[in-house]
Amino acid sequence: MGLTGLFLCTFLVVHMIGNLQLFKNDQGLAFNLYAVLMTTNPFIKTVSYLLYLSIIGHAVQGIYLVFKNKQSRPVQYAVYDGKASSTWASRNMGLLGTILLVFVAVHLSDFWFEYKFGHVPYATYATNLENGDVKFMPAPPDYKQFNKLEETTMSTPEGQFKITIVKNLYLEVSEGFKSPWLVIFYLLSMCAVSFHLYHGFQSAFKSFGINHPKINGIVNFIGTWIFAIGIPAGFAAMPLYFFFK
Amino acid sequence: MSEQNINVTLKVWRQRNSQSKGGFETYPLNDVSTDMSFLEMFDVLNEKLIQEGKDPVAFDHDCREGICGMCSMFINGRPHGPKQAVTTCQLHMRSFKNGETIVVEPWRAKPFPVIKDLVVDRSAFDRIISAGGFISVNTGNAQDANAIPIAKDNADESFAAAACIGCGACVAACKNASAMLFVSAKVSQLALLPQGQPERKQRVMDMVAQMDNEGFGACTNTGACSAECPKEISLTNIARMNRDFLAAEMTAK
Ligand code: HEM
Ligand code: SF4
Ligand code: FES
Image (cartoon, rainbow over all chains, first blue to last red; front, side, top):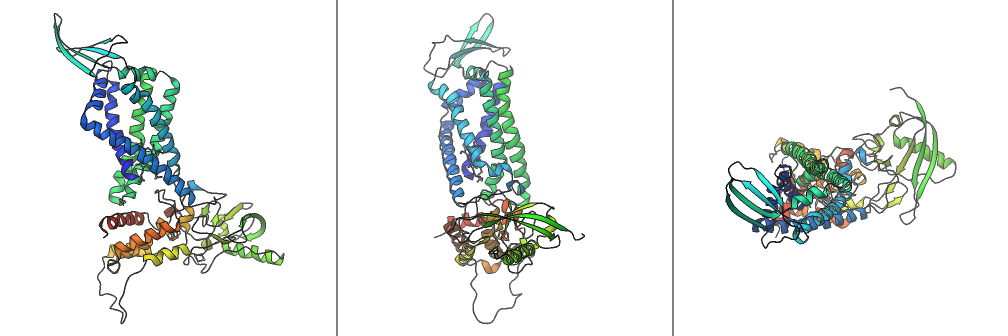
């Protein structure tokens, strides 16, 4: 549980940093190149299979844990004052995790599945090699190429240009987040991430036997400020950015 | 604090035996002195019930001074009631308001079956202790008490863990009915001392195995156990047991 949970946490950091490129004002060039790297680099592909397995393993073990622990108290209390002794997040990890599982399914079918198997249109970018200006031209809707990425350099009277033709996932993202329902769903899911990791991150260390005043300070700090606040806030900013753009 | 008398309404779990279903009975109780302990208040209730020719409420108690761990009562949603670091016998009626309704239930956990009313069978704890909560000593003359040097920090931590009275409040409070705080206290008190080293690995594996066999839930670090423990046993004991357990599992033959 802790092993897969912390692995998923490290993934969130990488995913966050990569996705920050959505905020670049380059019509999506950097983000689309990043998407190519993530889906072609053999090392990243290997890690991503490990990631899929971890999510499944984590969810299966988590749900099993919730059900098994329920069996340890067949007769419930009539009155149970949980908040007197523990945080809400710690008592609702199963619920929060289930929300996350639904989120992961929707999220993957929206972007990952579309990118790999759906119809993502291509985009052409012309980067002026002298001043770095990027010009964007959509490719025709039925345009297809064998490689995910084609790059050439071109000399014109206006100067040297680098031409990049790539699948325009950026468009999918920016169009997708025009829907208020999707934005609300993402925001709620990020709240679930926040609470799940507020308890989960520090809990994983305790499960490994690490609970010492010297270390708890930094673990709790990272768990709260990075994983419960920074990461969910950063991810939540993405749908909001495109919705209000 | 000056003595007062209050009126309370008790909603008490009544259950004839472990097979029967059980349910709540409501008992109004007037003129309860705020200086009474919670158990003394139950004594008054029981006298009243006996005078009325009814069956008194069965509840466990022994020392009535917070050291035996018998007085298991789940009061208004919390083990041993609203106060921190006290047992039910050390809880006083001044912790309640005049006119308050007080709900009293037995510990609820599969390994703690109800015997009658508020009395549960906690012998699962005894079986966990028998599985490994001991050290081997040679018979004959006891050796000099100071012959084995022990670091002060370890002695203190061991002593703090040994303060566990086996009351079961940790299990009662935990949403998973996990016994990790109890078992980890019993593992730690020996793991921290030189005398506990020979059986250290076997002990943690055997006691954890027995804990799981009894049907206690798995720990998810909610921390409710330590917050409700009358002896304030620290969560660091659970981490120590996890550490010892992982190490033992990886190196066991
Ligand atoms: C973004 C993805 C996720 C991350 C980063 C994550 C992280 C974590 C971490 C670090 C823990 C603590 C492990 C421990 O205490 O040893 C945990 C626990 C848990 N996770 Fe997740 N998780 C994620 C997704 C999910 C999903 C999809 C489920 C599906 C049902 C789930 C269900 C659970 C459950 C039930 C626990 C319970 C353990 C407890 O109560 O402490 N998680 N998670
Ligand atoms: S750890 Fe605390 S709550 Fe649990 S049995 Fe020991 S004294 Fe009672
Ligand atoms: S009766 Fe002994 S601890 Fe309460």
